[in-house]
Structure formats: C-alpha cells, structure tokens
Image (cartoon, rainbow, N blue to C red; front, side):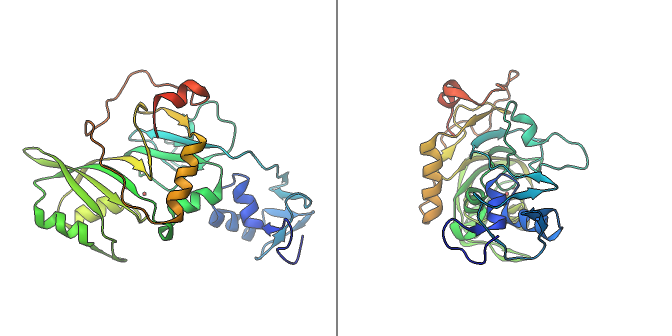
Length: 283
C-alpha cells in the first residue's frame, strides 16, 4: 500500500473496477463493507492508494487477478433485467452472454420492460464515461407512445421537461410514424436519469407502450437479432471513448423498421470474426 499516487499507483476502487468487480461506486461499497484486504490487512476507509503490480489485493479472501478488458453489445429482449443480482430470479442480461468467462456487467441500465442496445463490459472506467452526464454520450431510442403527439409536446421535449429532480437537457426528437391510437418517435438524450424517456412522456400525458434503444454514441444494433450479442470491434470501443471526450451532435436517425423483428433462433456465441461481421452495434 502506498501513500501517494506516484509511479504505477492507483486508487483502490479504480483497480477493483478495472478488474471487473463493478462500477467505482460499487467498489467503494465493497471497501466500506470490509470485504477488501491489501497485503493481508483489511481496509474500510478511503482514499487507499495501491500498486496493482506489487500489492496483494483480495476481495472476500480471493486474490484479485486483473482480467483482460472485454466489451460487448447485447440486443436485450423485454423481460430481461440489466442488474447482475436479481432477488426475483428473473433472467439477467449476463445470462445471455453464453461462453463469456469474464465478470461483466451492464453499462448503465435499461429497465426490464424495455429492449435494445445494452453495452456489457468489465471496464469500470469505460462504463463511467458511457453513463456519467458530464460526458454527454448520446443515447437514441424508439418509443411508441399513446395518442397523437402534438407539435407543442415535441417542442417541450426539445426544450427540456421539468421532472422531480429538475429540468431535463434539450433532446433531439422526430416523429417516425403516426398510427390511429399511438405515435412512434425517435428520441436522443445525453443524460442518464432513471427511466427518463418514460418519465418525460408521462409528464406530457403520453404513456410509453414500447421502448427500444437503438444507439449509444456511434454504435447501433444494425444486424444484431433480439437476444444476441457480439464483441465490440476495437475501432468501435475507440469511437465510444472519443464520443465521451467531447459533446458531439446527436447520432443520425435510424431509417429502419421502427421495431425489431423477434426471431426464433438466437445466436448464442458473440465471439469471433463471424459474429462481429453481422451487426453494428437508462429507459
């Protein structure tokens, strides 16, 4: 354990997050709960500075062995939860990543009834940059909302809507299709508020019937069947990192069928050249 951050030293929670144990905040809870030891000594208060190459770090008595960083994109079906721990025993997003040995977690959240693009990784720093509002990574959704969405409501979404914790940031929105009893829209947000899309439309008096995330930054679900996943290509990971470095214009609209087609056969393997060739790619 070191007293400063010189050389190769890092904060303990950052090392734990980089090893795939969750976000930095989750790793801080592991430390405060007394589940982490450094060189055989329990640590419960922060900051703690360690050298990951020299110090022996253990969680629940198990020596930490840093995992290689992995990055996946999953087309999450409705009814699947994003969290890795579900007391109700529902199917989790990680359960769909057959063959993945690393301890991955969902980047942000996509509520159980929603579907679509979910990034999965064991890189806590990457996850933070994709989800923290200060990085402003764009997230694009297709939503079917009840009734006819008038231009006045669309203007309010573009300007920002007042929710319980404050006004939302301006969003990009366009009408994709008007149906007799509902409206399909595409909306792009740069915040990470809980169930933000559903809450915005509820505030405007429109219930969200269906919600499907189609893009995060420059990465889309194109060609990826519902329930399938694939490895993110190195250039895609790099482009996501660039998107988190500076606020860029919202991604282009997805000019495809507004809803994914459910396929009976779901590809179970996300590894290898073939899986990466087929597709591109909280609410």
